[in-house]
Figure 1 (tube, rainbow, N blue to C red):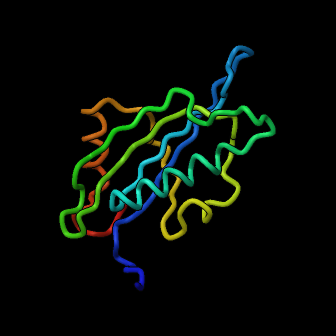
Figure 2 (figure 1 turned 180 degrees about the horizontal axis):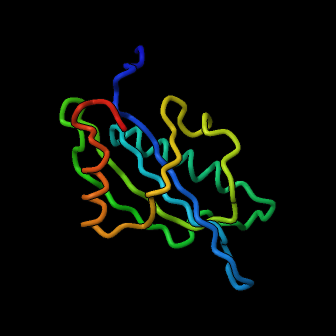
Length: 133
């Protein structure tokens, strides 16, 4: 199936660094994915695999994992939104195409949100037009 260039499907991310000697996983990652639920799950697995690469075989990527789901964001395509936030030892994404290739954006506004803050964030994306900002 050909990709629709006007589709709002996307992945947005942000990373914050926590400093300190006692920090086991220094990097806090936040991802927002807008897609169908089956695809969101596949993308999330790719995120964990990509950021879970470490020289430590006992490494766990999901330190303090939190997830917020947002029903249907775009009614036209039945797209859902999911926000995940977790800590990791991995401090960079080497190749975003391994996670999701069409639309992968850095968004400095992303962080761990409360439910109300997440609703406001969704509203700022203006996805109802079908074209993400």
